[in-house]
Length: 323
Image 1 (cartoon, one colour):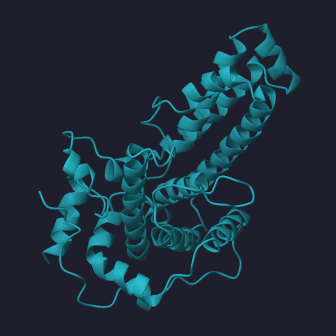
Image 2: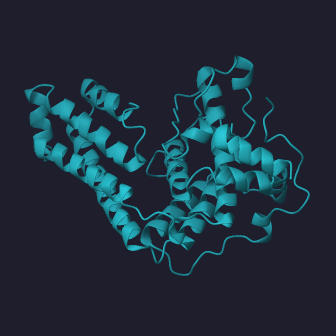
Image 3: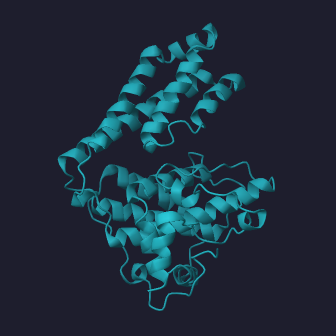
């Protein structure tokens, strides 16, 4: 089956070019921090030219991208995109990895469209219904717990390769992959800490010196379960929980770029040019890495295609192209 992204170029100017996102004068602290981080990343690469934007907009037209964006939720896509960009720019100083297999132009486009998606998500952040506000509160608590525990554990483990390997085996597992990304991440951390505490007395003592005990494992599990309960209690059909058409359009472009980055990194890793590993999160896995028959080597080498939008994504995107 041919890639639905390789159709005719858009006949009308992209709506995202005609109506750039308006950044609000007052934004949440998290949004401001993310935008500052993205700006720092963007400064590492040559500025995108009008031709760069025109080429991308023409290749992946508005109808296709908007249809693709309806298959995921904007907040989840944004979370996964930010996570990947941070992995590609891991140091606190913001220097990019020496080799990722991803071109400078593709990185710059990925950063720019992630920035636009952050602005779109911010535009509907105010006035959340009570259920969503509760979920947001539990999510922030879970993320704060993860940060504090992970920092303490990293400090306790130091450079002990054996201990770090035990922890990574839990953090990098696919366990809880069906759950919300923040819930799954905290549960995996709890599992890793529990394994370290049970390893031997030396490890347990090192962790205790950083305040990490069995109570820490319980606190991680409690915060993860509280967030999961809030997600299940989320009000259905509320307007504030719905992605707008403008958001779907930007989100679709981010999904296209994430798939290009995913394929480029995998190809570079197969050629032993990078050690970077990118894994789609729960929010984007169905689009970026769908389950299905194993692809041929020739198909896997097609790194310049768009998202392999099978299932609902394929039907909607194909319908959009034939209108």
